[in-house]
Image 1 (spheres, chains in turn cyan, green):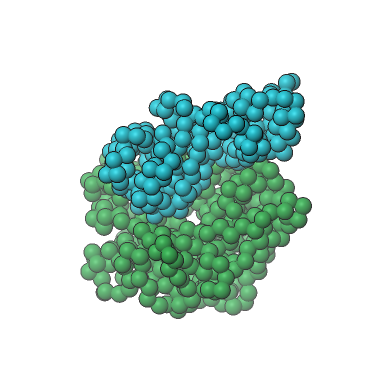
Image 2 (cartoon, each protein chain N blue to C red; image 1 turned 120 degrees about the horizontal axis):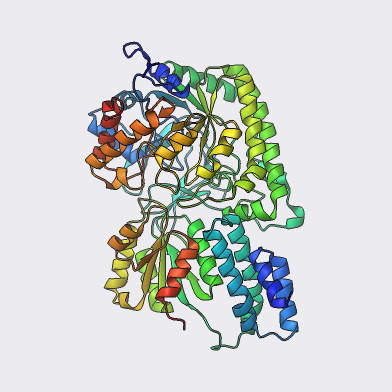
Length: 212
Length: 428
């Protein structure tokens, strides 16, 4: 098995120590850092996401795969020449105001990162004004909003309205997700897209956003 | 309705026992407030008291994490509930519900909280609550300034893999004392006096419930307390998880013995565990992981109870858990809640047909994510009548919403739901 294949396998199976070791070996063997990312890690995370959506993987398996790819990316990022790295796009992500739940949001963030997006994670209980400020500062392609509670999902249209009021709505694609959401409700809230799981969210984002 | 109980003589308790015995009672029994997963948000309890014209009083919050309001006897009668809970006096945040004091929630409703509830407001306007009411400890819960519920604040010390000790994740599990048993005896007697069926919420038996993993009742928790880290542990540190569960159940079984010695068969049902295995569309873990990490321990608890008592055992798990139903049955659970029919593969007809002989459905009455908070009273009525028809056939159904009734639920929808249960008179 080639080093790239071994690295792929280490990420898919969530072995963070082996991922770090193989990444180090890849660097020492002269692999381009971007090649390790593009040819092993991103496809590996896509495979983990596929297995998650196919219900071969569940939350623990996806989290350990995310931790493994993190271990590799942390070593490679400092080696990427400024301005030369390719990204799939930039996403600002957060759980909406009044809601402190972040398991779903974190899984989506892991999958975005694993698909090569720059991820700006605003955390939980994010007020509409904070989302607007992040859009103005980071110029993302996407804003991804999460809610678990029926009482808090109504902060989603409020957040989308605030982006609109700030004159930034046409610059970003807004995705929403979370337990009480569905396609109809996403449309009612004025979102551009809805996904019911982390892998589908990234697939939708890749369809909606052109790579940078 | 061949084995129907005589309508004129059926008491609330008879009605529940008949349903738990998989026979059709005179009417569908109803639970609201029996457990921390079948309750009503304090704001809706207050609204219902107003609606029914009951004495004006501040509502007690008996469960501060989800802000569940106490359903006093006058409201219980108005709602027509058939179940009385004995939920224990210690709250999730480690203080007890012995005395009460007024507190105004962020959205303005004045309620009664435990006299030991200690809270501060931070610079964001969020309310922070302190474990055991101790403000010198780091806060363990937060209610956002626009929120209606608390959620746990994770307090995770750096994890040193070489020094991880399962005992650190067991600090909150201890043997019940004679004083605890005296309280239990007293509360149980009060519950029995209502004539309703009694469900006990047993302490310390929830295995890996992520509401409890962060140990919101401890001042300085040790071990694995971060929720993501806990899920990772299922994959990375399964032996650690096994040892935590095993030792926890050792304590639980000793407590079961002590509790049973004191109360004998006065409980009709007991809530064991609220660990969620389902998400909206899938599961938190595989069935294999469940069988490996949870099944042996659930089986020990259920076996002890069924070998020594007449209590029926109640398992709560949100989400899409159809794939786990056979495992729940094999572990010895008698009752499943909240029966989230809106989740994947959880259609009422399918669940009743496949598992209705073995499991009592305690919940599933109406969707609290869509229909109850956002539907019309007519839509609520239609869904409730349908669920009563499907789940009620042949008994084995205790009516409750799918999980607690949430804040901001219109009271007219709650009333439409209750009227529909009352009006249900068999298959249409």
